[in-house]
Amino acid sequence: MDFTIISPKEVTEKLLGKESFFILDVRNKDAFSDWKIEGSRVEHLNVPYFDLIDGVDKIAGQVPKDQDVLVVCAKQGSSEMVAQHLVDAGFERVFALEGGMKAWSEFLHPVKIGNLKEGGSIYQFVRMGKGCLSYFIETDGEAIIVDPARTVDAYIDFAKERNVTIKHVVDTHLHADHISGARLLRERTGASYYLPPKDAEEVQFSHEPLIEGHDVSIGNTSMKVEPIYSPGHTIGSTSLIVDNHYLLTGDILFVESIGRPDLAGKAGDWAEDLRNTLHEKYKQISGDLIVLPAHFSSVSELGDQGQVQAKLSDVYKKNAGLNLDENEFRSAVSENLPPQPNAYQEIRQTNMGKITPDADRQSEMEIGPNRCAVHG
Image (tube, rainbow, N blue to C red; front, side):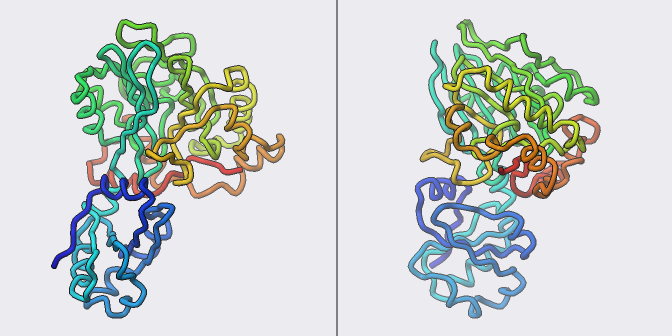
């Protein structure tokens, strides 16, 4: 008998199916405490690989024999050795994560959000291991991709499967927690790349300005993507109203939290912008719009298929960050904030085109959880 290699896609299906399974994470304790695979019916045990080189006798009593056991490491090799030790010790339902946490960080899970009024659909790409959300909006044979991840093959393959041309790529703001795939998508597909001009003052590449009042369209239908200037997370942050039904909020507003204004060192300056966007600008649009954010913070935000969405009026009722008075709000978004994303300054410089790290370094820069949110 041998252990089984399991892909990030298969692990995602287990999580969304609320299957019960046990994770033996053999990374070092700091890496585990910073970031791990989470699910509503997942149990964890963290024991560093070096403590298990000679076998698993010391932990055999802590690992269940009546559950699937998933062994996880950084890149796969260490988990395979420990998985084999478990099999040798008599465990029968043993799996090792293909590609390790590196692959888990990069995997994208597409889920359909809904149909557009005149034909076409909007899909959400859920980056399960990073908390990032990106969007594929298609109608009449053309598509717009919003806030794409670095691993662009998933979008290109998705477009080919649907015989759709990627026409435009949009970043709602200059990202600081992950490397944007927008420029790479432009290079590989010929798409136009839109970026808010106030976030693009230092970028080293050409782009189209994403400006309120200048809609972006695809195909020959009346479906439009309407930019709404909504500063606060960054000075250029721009939301998108799609088909008069969906509100893509970028990193300004999430389902259970709000954006943070400090990732460019501007917490004091941008806190008021953030409050104005959340309590004035967004209040002027319909509460029936469906909020589709650029991140999620917890698996509790995922629907049955993995989707993250909520009606704007419901978000205002339930999101604690939207129910703070002015002083509480300023304190929440400028003091006692969670740790900043790993390598966020280097990521910002990469997204500006100022530096070009190699693929391995880019992967290292992105490792870790979503840290763009402030929880009220």
